[in-house]
Length: 384
Ligand SMILES: [Zn+2]
Image 1: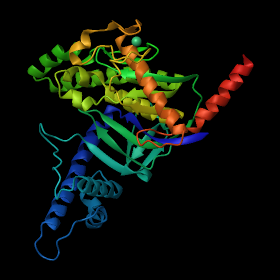
Image 2: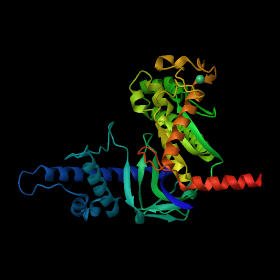
Image 3: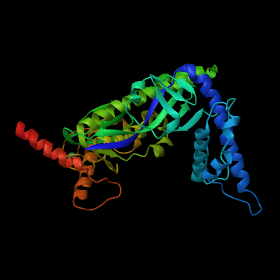
Image 4: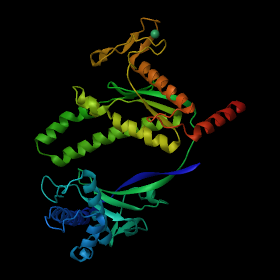
């Protein structure tokens, strides 16, 4: 069953084009600020001409502005107008923040464009009469984009971002289901005992980061930040890929990382990347035709996964308790694995209820592939 789902390709632009892009970004900011000014003036007029300008109105007002700009073209200007109008409508303000081109409070560069203005040309891409070379250009092979942008990161590097539809062949997972407990000591532990360790990516580099910031090495500090983020991302990618390739039903506890981020544990929480991991499980699962469930985490640490008695450790203060023995049935548990098993059990209640035609808002109905998987496992059994 081929299916297509949206993804964003991010390709790093080779540094020889940075100068061009930096100048073009200033022009983008000028257009954006023009929109901001014009839309605000029109919205605060006291006479009958007072108007809330739409993206269409702004496109109309900026028509022909290309001749004042060296780099950007009409399609980029139109994209800026529509994006501006969308953002403004979303926050319901008469005015947005200005885009700043220079100085310490400078906005990171952003140059949007429409599909037709970015063309592949040999081993490079062409945009506004300029040829760009990008890294990993083979990822552009056979993909179609509707629009996209050049975006700058905090280090100052430029990326070509293209939202694309990738067709994905849905597969059949070898195993039925897994529960995942998100924790602080390990970022995630599965009901089968697999762990994603929190290696404290941030804490390791914290001192070096502090030293760089004190000495005013802003660029190097930004680079280190980016490296930490990527290492964390990489670990989450590998873990979620493994889970999605292995299991059909994936159940995650609904830890609210934002709520915990306000507590004393904040640094560990932000460091561990739960949100990122959940998001990855969700979209990768969707691509592969898995069912991802989010269940209430309540009592999952305290309940014994063998007998259900609430005999386990509870509360943040008892985080130190890693191993415990159930006072009721005598089973000994690893804290996190036990919690993951409880989460799995809570999840399995969800999908049985879905099969019984009771719709629950937080639960996605099991996909067709679960039937496929059952059929597949029968074949497997027959072969064995
Ligand atoms: Zn027990």
